Image 1 (spheres, one colour):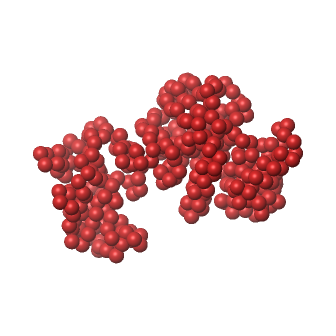
Image 2 (cartoon, helix red, strand yellow):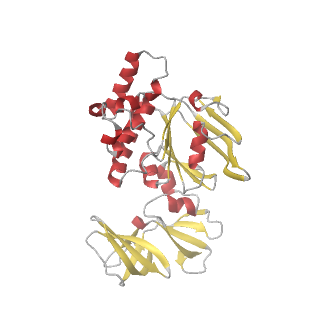
Length: 347
């Protein structure tokens, strides 16, 4: 295992900086997830760590040693790709052990590592099968197994679940998290899916336009976003934002204000009675759509031209076009400067 340190790391393509001098320290054994929209620099950063992209500026250390000029095979890291990158003509056993074939380990130890990885990943019954006979989730396990047998200092994952269906993604999230808890290997994971980030990470790194906007635990980022982008990117459904202004008693919602008032859909409660806690913010809007989810219903509303999502009890299904009152309890509002979009705290 190893620490990974990025100091003023830059990746430049011609005159364009895809990664703009970022600083980050990843602790030994930590599971760090990079999130952000396409083109934000997260995969480029991962590929620089792996040695698959040259570093244009700054310093990269793995285990305390500068590795800027080292080849990928000299960095003792293992990478799992989005498309699995397993060989269709080889068996599962051969695919898992592929990275060991050129090593000087005794055959018995190679076989032991392959079988141990297969046992941990639930692939023991499939060792003699070829990838065509496996499900997508099993193929991804094979790719992970091939990384495991090398006993790397760090695992790098580049959107490994994006090709799986929703149920398999959910299952594989748990399996990768359990694997990390068992192996304690430093892990860097890239995804555009904030649900993956929230459920798997020890720490999340939010990137945009080649910069790091914020790092912290999932709870830190959910509860204390530093700006509008992070507030809306972390949490599902995304945070509601409506214009407003401060007054002597709190905030007032309305066009032309100098602040943006944020409230998460699960904190904005719609009910038939329209009641709420004392001192709560109340908003009235027109129902545009509903999403019954069983235990709760997501209610989409138009409030003074702003699209807002509220949460209602599961058995309450308001009709489209009806008027509905929603309430947000004190302490659940997030305030942002309307010009800079930086956080002004909570209220």
